Image 1 (cartoon, one colour):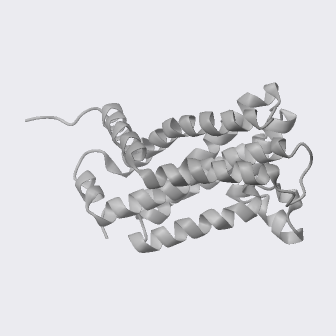
Image 2: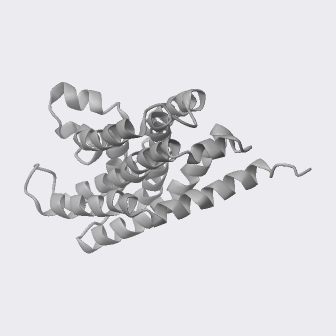
Image 3: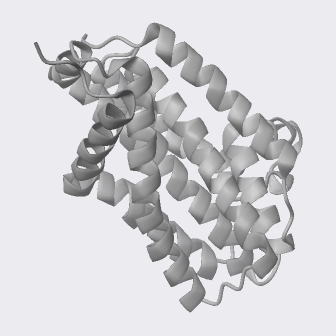
Length: 246
């Protein structure tokens, strides 16, 4: 009688599967790289909204944060929602992987793919004149990792509790909403109560923390803590409510 593989082996196998799926999925590539790249170029050369100069120093870290949401939230929510609809997750549900293993495997795969995203977007931003504070590169990296952890949890929460068609609509709608909640534009530039509320929500926390690290070399400890708390709550809810099939 065969015995299940060790938990680490199961998670690594799922990570390889998820990473391969992302690379083969043209739609995720579009959402995760092409759209943030378009936003980077458009916001850098557009006079609106008004931003501190040089604009690229404000725009680039925001676009790196946008890329996190694109792959970790929108891409993963849609992919997982349709995997559930077509029975892929039902097959995983009868394996020893479990909900926790699925969450960890997807998170690791997103982190691997994000390295490719960051290299492409960061390279283009450097060509456009971005000059981040060298002392801010490490806190920027930590910020982006915290963002991945939080938004993958949100993706699995909606993908595991809603029908695939609803996931598709909600994930794309929230991608647009997050743009206006401090993800790309500083929350301080948003009107009144909107900006004040956005500063405590995951997209605003991620965008503001990325800019603080890249521009000032800051270590935004409070933003990291809040992002991880948001992610922990979402992960707990996902673990308890995730359904393997419609």
